[in-house]
Length: 133
Image (cartoon, rainbow, N blue to C red; front, side, top):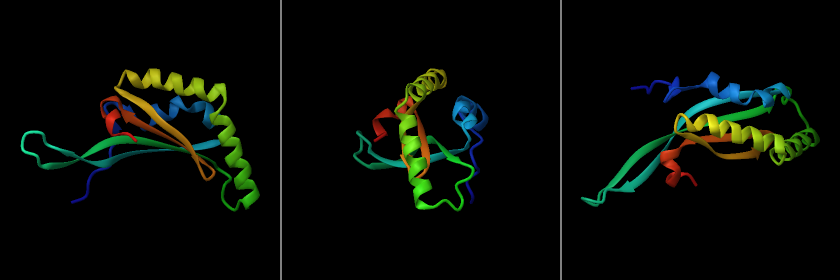
């Protein structure tokens, strides 16, 4: 049986999330938003059995639309631009504002990192904070 694709988590839609990152989009980056789940294991305190469950999370990926055919130099340049951007006050303010808006739904930005020539932002539920590494 196929698992249906999630359209939203607790009222958070892809469009709502992407609107929070409009500044990055205005700088020429395409945004892709994915609803996903990560398996976790816990031990039931009463009977000692291992329980496998899944915690939902949201992953946003940002990359320039012109990334196809880039040479190594251009990829390194974009990676440096993204790393510099994540250290800027503009980016920190955007994440703070995003967290304020996500808090109303019980979610928060758990991590942002540059991977290759992409910026990835991960969003988790506040109640799952103990499982986020």
